[in-house]
Image 1 (cartoon, one colour):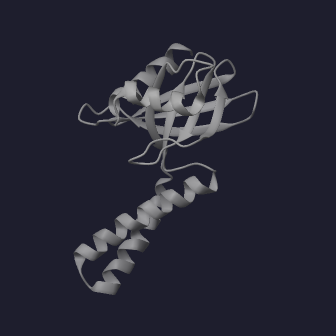
Image 2 (tube, rainbow, N blue to C red):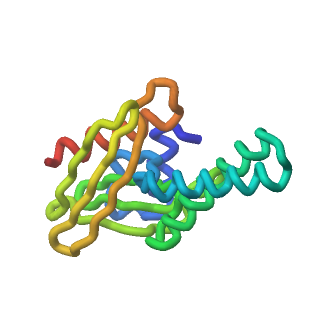
Length: 165
């Protein structure tokens, strides 16, 4: 499901064939570490208090993190995971539904007016997009981890974006 050629096909299925999709990968929003940490702490406390079980605390913490990430993404009109598709002229951001793929386009950036900054964060990379013409900005997180199924698509997107800088 995360094969780069399959992701390109899924993106093209939503975007049409007007412009060829050069690269596609699955990215997430860069975490707001304070908010996600607070969500995990709150969820862990609730799980532990309700069931008085360390395992329940761990499950609650994970649920709290996920709920916080979902709320942050929703507040921006985005989804937790997104398919980023690069065409010759645009950077297109689509929603990503695990198990089924993209259903719609969420954002689009003009490559000629968008400044792209890619920074390392362990085995992850933060991809900052700032479109001077529209005033839109977005910071995504992708992976380069060799054991991740998403890394090939993410690396292809980042390579293409770095080439246009």
